[in-house]
Image (cartoon, rainbow, N blue to C red; front, side, top):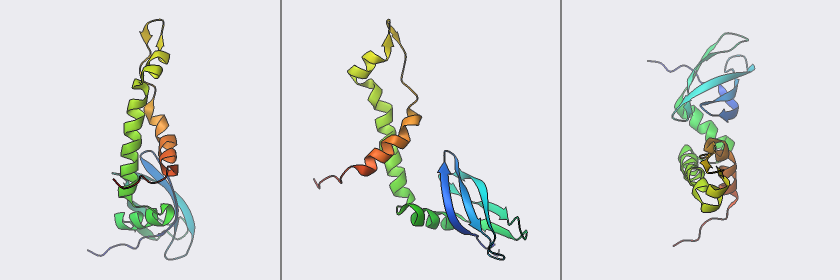
Length: 134
């Protein structure tokens, strides 16, 4: 089976469940945007060029290379950071101070939507100095 050419991935903008990609056609150099679902954090699929209809195939290894170029980190680093941020987001409201704030007239209002905090926690983790060796 012959592999279809991958378009050049000029930009990528991730969102939950996928990303918007700016692709450049290998045949006519036309730039176009597509919304692409991701599986396991990796986007792949077929995309025809809107200018010349040339069929491109976005392969996982091409997507991973674009992530490395865009963010100077690999998907493993991103997965570890997301795991750490998720642990913090799932635990912060259990602190006695926050538990008291989340209780109104004896009614537990429950944990807030933690997923909304992941971006902020991830950015804060990136700004921390590296941990000293143990």
